[in-house]
Image (cartoon, rainbow, N blue to C red; front, side, top):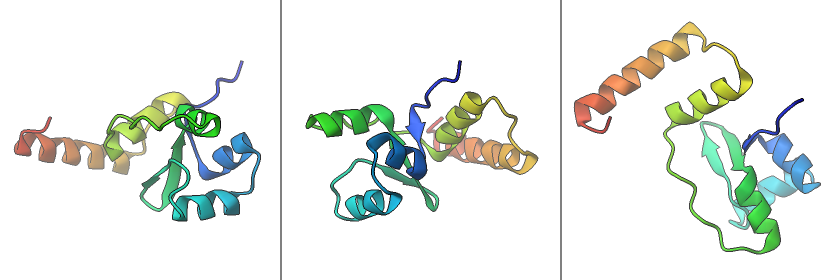
Length: 102
């Protein structure tokens, strides 16, 4: 059985809400829909979208670093990270540790 992802891509969010990707992008630009840009791509929390459709006040998503988002998607997809991402992840962890944020 295929599980539904908690974090949606632009295409998945558009499908979930049954609107076009263009509509989603317009709504993002106008600040009408909850979403977060990760690099050059958009990601959406399924529960936040669901609450938004219901008219509920948005609850802030827990702050996740880009590394945490990558790890969550990696785990969800069940794939190994390419070597470069592993190196980047280790470097970022070292920087966080050096700043005392790890």
